[in-house]
Length: 235
Image (cartoon, rainbow, N blue to C red; front, side, top):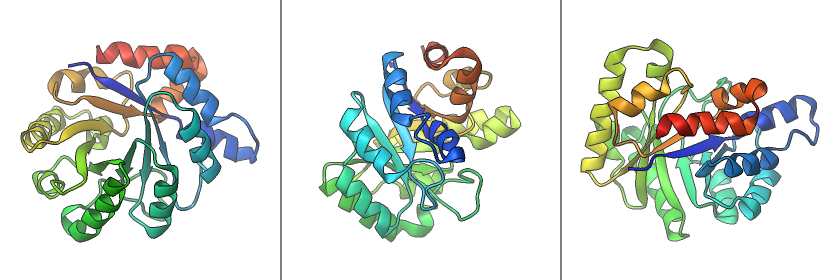
């Protein structure tokens, strides 16, 4: 199976927003990432617009040549934006006011009706839908709803602890999701140091979305080199 790298360019926008400047441009970063071999560009438009802005989505949707994956919360505001932009994929995420970064997976089991209705609206518009969830059986089972074809497993606990038991947990979740007909992606906290172990432990994961570490490495390596190093680890 050929594994795909999705490059998250949020932190390019974070740097831009620190000065409310026009640069660095996340679209420019997306085009470089594609040229280096990325199979997907991922961005998260938050309610507080701390990094990606509405106009970024419009420009990305018009220019990205691979796939555009937009992460967003299940709100009416986001539904209107997503249905207007119509990216290839939307990944629904949990979003809490004041968090530094996404702190956990979407509670699909506890918000089943809301998630199903949101996914149905997007699916009717031809948008593929994924759910960012913790690698737990109840969340995987609850994700089997119309309009959802993928789950993205939250790898934060593996990234934060390095506990090999977390690799088992992710591998088990991957096989459970695949057995139910869902494609599997993974992301959150993945780095050049911890990615390969996950690839080996859970070969059924077909897509990895990586942002913070990849953009951080790019400060020292250059963006093209950074993207290629992550792609090499997925081979």
